Length: 122
Image 1 (cartoon, helix red, strand yellow):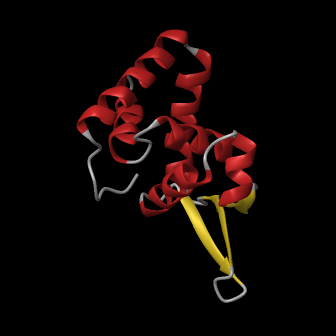
Image 2 (cartoon, rainbow, N blue to C red):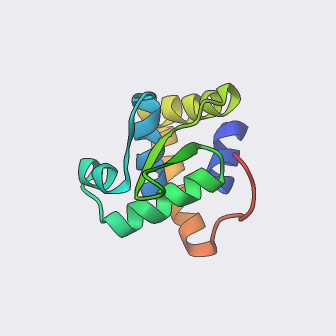
């Protein structure tokens, strides 16, 4: 597995929900939406997606915007070029290689059992 992909999986994209959210934003870089709308789009539990979104914000993969004095919370893809480049490597590995896709999913399953490395930025 590519070292850049392995690092992303260890520090930021630590489960399948985070992977789905990350790939959604990478494929739609101008996408800005609420957590509930993202959950509907992914057909996922809003609580799980909300947890994944906040984790991805803390790792620097997503930006969080509050409107209306915090009444509305929106999420968007980071503008950081280096981070977007790392996610691009992950996206290519996941979408263009069956072997790497299986390896990524196995890695996420392993992290699910052992837990991710906390506190690191992507």
